[in-house]
Amino acid sequence: MHYIGRFAPSPTGLLHFGSLLAALASYLDARSNRGTWLLRIEDLDPPREHAGASDSFPRTLEAFGLQWDGEITLQSQRLGLYQEILEQLIQQQDVYRCNCSRKQLQLRSGGLPYDGHCQQHPPNHDSPAAYRIRTADQNNTFQDRIQGIQHYNLATDCGDYVIRRKDNLFAYQLAVVVDDHLQQISHVVRGCDLLTETPKQLYLQQLLGYATPSYAHIPVAANAAGQKLSKQTYATALDLSRPVPQLLTALEFLDQSPDPALSDARVDDILQWAIEHWNIDAIPGLPAKEIAPESTCDN
Ligand code: GLU
Ligand code: ZN
Image (tube, rainbow, N blue to C red; front, side):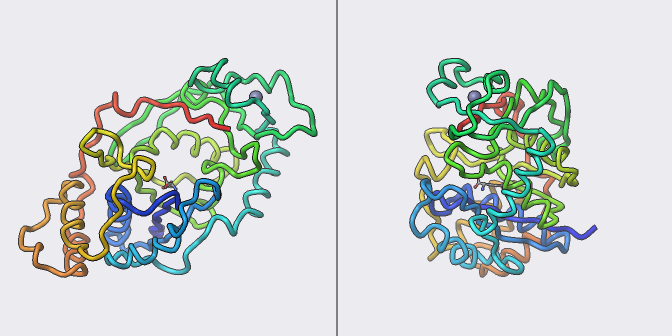
């Protein structure tokens, strides 16, 4: 099987050190396996988009020597594909409509997975509604290349999750599964913040008869206050004028023990060294408590 990997940032902010870790790890894993590496921009949520972010991604990756293969994919141009798959899931009766407000959800479930209210009380046909996947009380596992075996219960850890929001925007879960399938992604390497989202993606793959890629979730970087670095916590954007020290710090963070002599090297030489020495087994897994599932049941 040919290795196809990807980096899939959302344009909710500029790329930061945490994004560099995900980009670099997925790039090195692909290149050390003589694989293809794709760039997919996950611009599904215009209200949360940061002006100029999408345009800055290719420039930023190029400054760090991370050259992708082929055309850049924009999810905003693939809405028809997601609609087709939504219709398939409706046909298969794997989804139901939900018009609960954020406030009702908060009152009834208090951050736990959705309680299934609208399955018993279907909303009127003319009222705006989200679509939720009907999950089953199913214990399951998957093997993560870095985090090891993951145990979960689909109903209690994920619950009936949203794949299209009440405002008609497609949710990340649906688009990521459809695109990973259509782009024939064989290996997903991404941040550990998405470890708890993976069971939802595996279930959708199962419902749609898609193959499941191999997953590796790298540790995510935290700031000095111990918060996960994200575009929302205003992690500092990468500095395009000095990629070398940031690349070396990223390699250290990924436990790749970069050769000290590399501090005088050029970006391309650093990447060449890193491809040759890439060792995903050196990356430590998280203690299990840090990956306890969080509820992500937003409408
Ligand atoms: N677009 C997602 C994010 O930026 C990542 C998607 C993925 O790697 O599966 O958090
Ligand atoms: Zn509901």
